[in-house]
Each structure stands twice: as structure tokens, then as C-alpha cells.
Length: 145
Image (tube, rainbow, N blue to C red; front, side):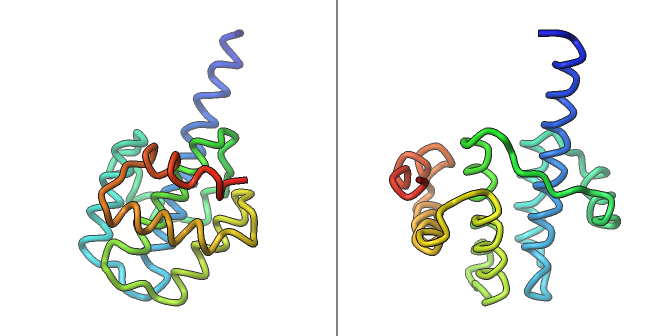
């Protein structure tokens, strides 16, 4: 693989991570209440994705600068959906706007529109039972196609 291809993959991954942070911020704020527990989860996910708090602040202040990107890798797509479901439910109050937005992201990520509601609920229950991204993905694999 050429250096330029490696650099392109790195930039794509970082762009996808920035897009993911923007999506999470939107999810946290869609109900009109971006609370402390949501911000703490956002910081944890940002750190896992190599996004600093300063970068997170810049994304939050200038979301229009971030282009929506769908991860090419199906595992990464599921990880992002899992994080979105987690953000939606972390405060124990799922608002209609959050549910609609989560459904929209799942469809944009290419999940079967007819199974999205089940997929989101199964993911939420796995999160509630402290299952990881990978454990949850294995449990809902049949819904992903």
C-alpha cells in the first residue's frame, strides 16, 4: 500500500470520527437538554476515537464544518449506531425526537428499515445490561441484514 493510500485511510478514519462526534452531539441536544451525563459519555467516546476535548469543543461550536460520513466498515457502522443508542438512552429518558433521530441514522447507515426499531431496542437492552459493542453486535447479527 502506498503512503498516500495510508494517509487517505487515516484522514477518512479521522473524518468519520469527527462526523460521529457531530452525530452524538446532535443526539444529545435534540431533546433540548444536553446534560452532564451525556457530556461525560461524549468525552469518553471522543477519547476512544482519538478526538481531544478541544476538537470536541470545535465540533460542537461549528457543526456545519463537519461533513456527515458513513463508515465503510460494517463493524464501525454498528459501533457508531451502538454509541448513538447509548447517547439516546444514557439519561434514562428517551424522547420522541431522540428515537426518530436514532432511527434516521440507522437507516442512513444502511440497516433494514423494517428491522431498525427492533435493532435499536435490542441494542438499547444490551447496553442496559452492560454488553459491549462487539457482544451486542454478535447478539443482534441476524437483524443487521
